[in-house]
Image (cartoon, rainbow, N blue to C red; front, side, top):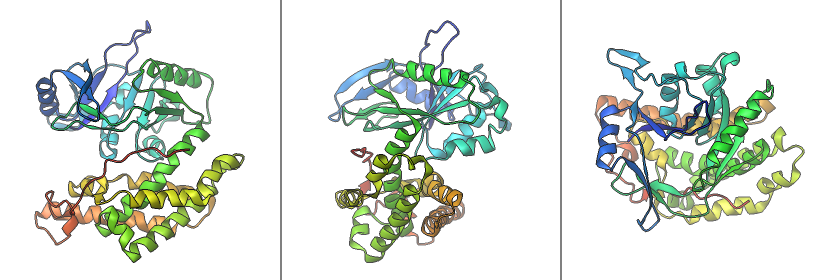
Length: 373
């Protein structure tokens, strides 16, 4: 079910009302809500029910009938928003809520990659005077959708955290810092989330390893239309892996954020990091990238905020980014080819993307484990 985001709203007396869920597909979201007991259930790795939290019926924020450019949702001003949705739904979601957001709003983005904030400011919140405050979140919980459900979750571990950091901004007059601290304090009331506030540099240090991993395995899997274990076995795939990794690590090692933090930078530059990536790839077995599933459905991948992030940082610093740029173009070419295939409803022989039933002989990757830092 394409649930767009979960909201945490604070009233003026400091009381926290129940969580509200907003959805783009009204009938589907409402039906699932009824079928699954009007609650979000949390199960352990074996399927045992850990907790059940009642929720209100999802509220529809899709376009009005006959007016595709306008949202029909009118829920009033939004103080705090937590957005945890796919990259394809992010812009439509916040565009639909634009009339309820201003500089008093705090938006927590739990997204793959980096650079989303800059894109939102460019396309939606283009006026700095009324721009919201952003907090970036990085979830290390091992969560998956519980089998056969849309609103129940399966928790595959007990050591996860929600890492939070405020996005640096030039015009911080004190109010923004207070708003951010208050929002993190609200999330800190949840023991299950285990939220931790980090400085920007420490957040970046925790976020980048997973991005580097995704920039390698997901992009190469899509470009070659292969499983993870086939990357290990194919000479040309390994060459692309090494060229992409060397370029990306050089970009990361040149980031000004790490200029005065040699101990943090050492994590990326030592040989152990490359060895860890290779070992992790070897342990994936016959799994395939979630990006392949996205392309099969005609959805966009987060490549703009993974490899594309490294391209943008390299451009800022005047560094070489030819391999990452090529990878971004090739992943987008795969997506465009699939779109043409779906529009024509005629398979053109791109076997990994021809039909949803083709699983490449493996299973989709659900390994979102965190790096040990």
